[in-house]
Every structure is written in structure tokens, then in C-alpha cells.
Image (cartoon, rainbow, N blue to C red; front, side):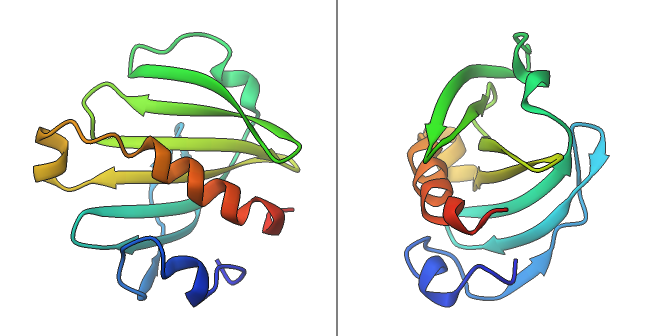
Length: 129
């Protein structure tokens, strides 16, 4: 989180205040930060694991696509309920992820937040170990 600058978040349409991410992803506690805004919330976090866990289709996602972020392979995962879209890449022994969760209005409109998740991951990827 300390590598994320105010210049980074200025383009994300969120408030500059961040809070620690004390959530669970993939059944594990995550390390990271959350920013909230009027349209969506953005989570940037790491969780122990490997991208290999996404090789098999998962019924939770209606989109599960391989992506390339810089020199790193990764996965784009879109929740079938339109709530969230995540992009994950390998970082040492963990997965570094960007997740964009929509507010209720945009969820009901089926707004595609995946381009924003990809943009943010491309923006921060050079800062990820």
C-alpha cells in the first residue's frame, strides 16, 4: 500500500483515504488496502497462493480469462453477479490483486468494471515485487 501514491489514485475516482483490507479472499486473509468512492470501491491486496488455482473453471465467475500485465501472466475474474472484477498476477509466493467492486446502481446497470481493474493493475504492476 505504501507504494501507491496520491497521483496513482487520482485517476481512480475514489476518495484519497485508504483503509486496511482485513478481508478473506480464496479462503485466506489478505494484506492490502481499500479505497472507496461514489461509483466503486478498489481493493489492492496480496494473498498467499498461486495462479494455478484459476486453471479450472469456477462457477462463481462468468468471465475467467488469462491476461498479460507487463511481463507477468495473470487472470481476470469477473463475478457472475456483476459485483466485482479482479485481476491477479503472481508476486513471489503470493497473488497480487486489484479488485473493483461496484456500488448498487452500477451493479444493477451491469457496468463493466474490468477495464478499470486492468488499467489499475497495469499502472501498479511495476511496483509489485
